Length: 195
Image 1 (tube, rainbow, N blue to C red):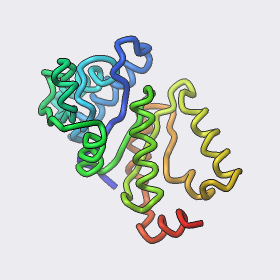
Image 2 (image 1 turned 60 degrees about the vertical axis):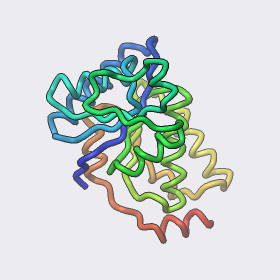
Image 3 (image 1 turned 30 degrees about the vertical axis):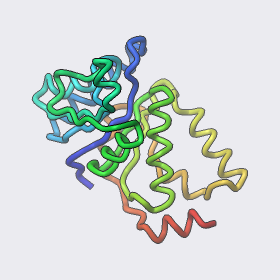
């Protein structure tokens, strides 16, 4: 599939390691070059800021979705092409999920993990049928891969569920993983969820 809008989940910490900042900027620039609109959490620092700068510095479009309390704390990115204010974190996730064709998770904290778990759960239940790609820089997400395999071993999820997410090592691997996506189908996903 060729996406037109990609939701990116990532950190807004000012202390984010430079290797992750660089990857976020690189992703913003790459998606901009492909004319792909980015939807993200609306922040101006950390990976969020780098992602936005990578897009905007290269003529891209980046849409920030940000809860009102974060706007009041002045966490919104004034450079964003557009900022959409929402009521809370749950609403932010819903807006991004509704508007995007695919999702990418960069290394991040609990917020990023929450967003990633949310889209994986929706996909598992057949509520969405969209690519989910995890950027596993420096094996950041390798423990998550191990946890998913433990869930399979303990019969908590199907062995097919590991295929619901693609783990890649570099930014350049992200779009090929999205473009190679084969839809699962709502009925197939729900059959697996019921096992």
